[in-house]
Image (tube, rainbow, N blue to C red):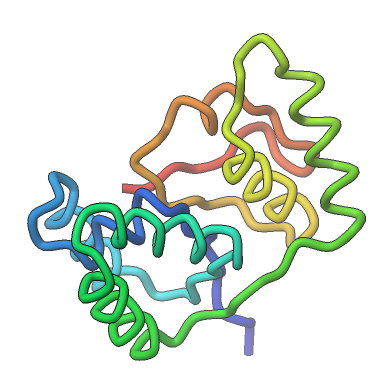
Length: 141
């Protein structure tokens, strides 16, 4: 039996998934329901998403986010020292594009974990990036 597909999740997608008022909410819910693989949530994405909920809805928003997060069958992934080296390389290569740090973390994780799909609504950085393991990342939704 093949292991389930894995897809990396960015904070813009995770925030939209759990915030009914967010523009991309319906699209995020559809992807989450239809996706047959396992979501990979980098810890840096959790921090950024919690910040977004706190900014928009205060502690009650963060608490609701945590409750929903605990219901997910997700793989949580940290950033390793080898990832930091690659993040530095990516940010240096694309210096003029001013890529977001968390996006670069996701890019490095995609390469290390051999993942080809990313759920994000912030597509600019991911469409610019050319990973080492594939021609380009597949962006959902």
